Image (cartoon, rainbow, N blue to C red; front, side):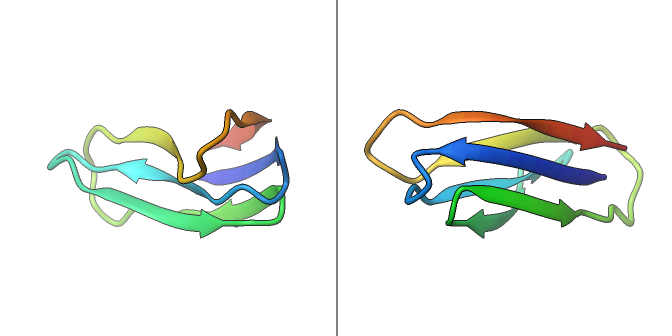
Length: 67
């Protein structure tokens, strides 16, 4: 799965990733206002895409996920 997104404000810290069937969040911590990462899943199952805002402000995110 490839995640390509931008967010504002740019100085916010964000976690982008997948929650596995066991409820564990596998993520990339991102700063700087954009992400372009690929996540590879080695085991089959139902995964959920998730974004966590680590900042104390509202963040707007827009992007594309290809899987």
